[in-house]
Amino acid sequence: MADTVVFGSLLYSHIIPPVLAFIGVILLCSGIMDRKTNYAIAGIILFFAAGILPFLILPLVLG
Image 1: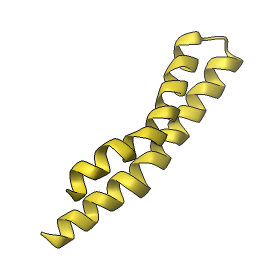
Image 2: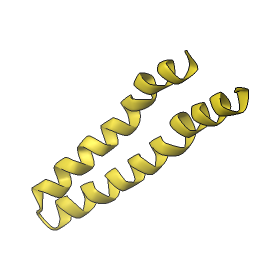
Image 3: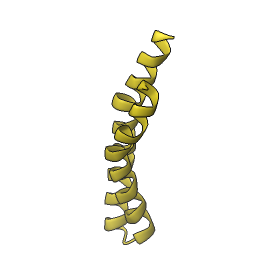
Image 4: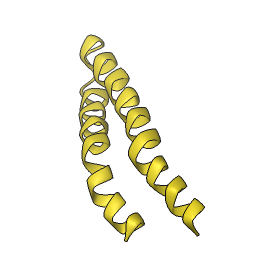
């Protein structure tokens, strides 16, 4: 049980947010340079989701 909570908290606080932020920055740069607004908007949403989701998910995981 404790291993699951530790892995869940590490997953949602240290692994998923940087991956989402990196993908968001790549999409944002690609969208701005190629003038594709869909990519730019998706990049902005992913970047902000990477910053906000740990605060929404971790209280549920840690109880």
